[in-house]
Structure formats: C-alpha cells, structure tokens
Length: 213
Image (cartoon, rainbow, N blue to C red; front, side):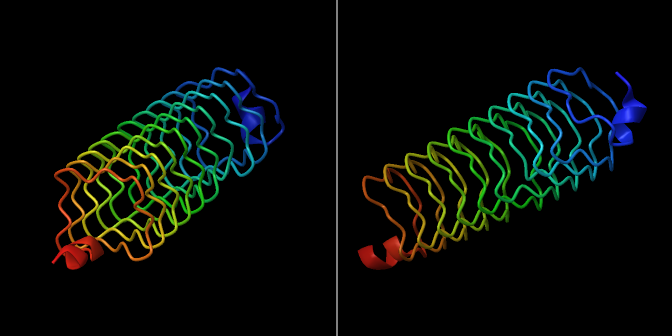
C-alpha cells in the first residue's frame, strides 16, 4: 500500500485495504471509499473523513481525536477507539460497535446510531441532540449531563445507565428500558414515556418526581 500516495490525496478507493497501525493523521480522506478496510490501531488524529465510506470498516483502538467523521460508519467496529473531540454530526453509525470507546467532548448531534452498541461507554456531557438512538444498547453507560433533547430513544436499553442532569426534553423514550437508571435532576419535559420501563429508577428532581409528589 502506497501510504505516501494516500497522504497526498491521490488515492480515492481503499475498499478492503489493510491500513492497520498506519499514520494517517491530518490527512484529507474526504469521500474516500474505505468500506471493509482494516484500520485497527491507526493514527487518524485530526483526519478529515467527511463523506467517506467506512461501511463495515474495522477501527479497533484507532486514534480519531479531533477527526471529522461526518461519514458512513454503518456496522463499523470502533471498539476501544479514541473519538475524543471528534465531529460526528449527522454521521451514520447504525449497528456500529462503540464498546470501550472514548467519547469525551465528541459531537453526535443528529447522528444515526440505531442498533449501535454503547454498553458501558462514557458519554458524559456529550451532544446527542436529535440523534437517532432507537434500540441502542446504553446498558450501564454514563450519560450524565448529556444533551439528548429531541433524541429518538425508542426501545433503547438504558438499564443501569447514569442520566443524572441529562437533558431529555421532547425525547422519545417510548418502549425504552430504564430499569435501575439514575435520572436524578434530569430534564424530561415533553418526553414520550409511553411503555417506558422505570423499575427501580431514581427519578428524584425530575418531572416524574414532581408529578408523583
């Protein structure tokens, strides 16, 4: 693989390519086809991937700090990847695996994450406004202070999740499982809670708490 040609922006088709552990930091990979590519352990710090196709790509342990990932990441494996400060606005992450990924200060507003695995991941203070989170596995995830306003969480698994002070205004939580979740002081005005499971859920300081009082 001619890495220098890739860094120079001369290669636009890298479907199935083996780029494991390569240094592609700050490279412009906009609209490059990386479907099914192997990028495990690669350095993609501040790399531009706007409009790139990473369908089914493997990015395990990849460094994507500050990267522009407004791309197609359907079914991508991002397990243990560092996505701190990455831009994922409107990105397509349907069915992606994000277990143990780092998402500090990551922007996911309007992203499509239906069916993704975010079990145990820390999303503290992350922007998820208007995101498609249907059926996402947030089991034991830390969503404290996260912005989930108008997000679609229909059928999401939020068992044991920490949603303390999270903004869930106008969010769709229909059929979601919040058993054992922490909703302390969360904002729930206008949220759809039809069929939501709230067994052993802490709701102190929320709209639910005030209604029940």
